[in-house]
Length: 162
Image (cartoon, rainbow, N blue to C red; front, side):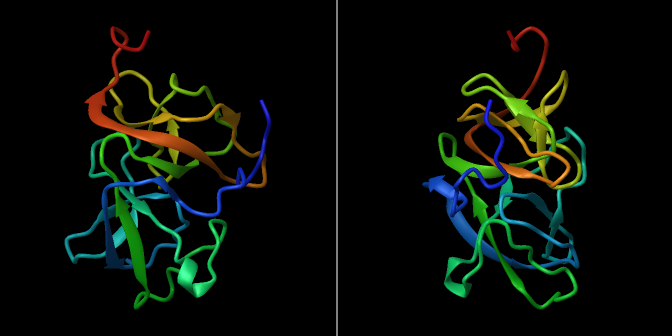
């Protein structure tokens, strides 16, 4: 499978019918395609529960400011408002995969890695996306974006993973 850092995606929402909202940053360095979670103060930070539950909120890219999918929202600028996508079932987004993950189109189920990116779901993980392209993410250079289709949230189990 071909390796590519940005996979030629210049935007995060590829097929999108959900909602776009903005939230203040909670002092986290955030990259477009990351999974985030709202804080009690109404800000967003990296989703920090490995395989665990949470709303599906994905950081979008601010194209109007000249930003690309590889740019980072600086956590030191806590006044910065972060565009966040709230996808519906069937929406296709370029989500951020952790380093070294190999995914297969329409087979690989994705969940939170606990650091804002996605990993392959194992037993009892909350599944949020299914890979919408086959690829292997990055190398030591970092994360890669992968097209993924939003699914109804469910718990992965051995019985339904075959």
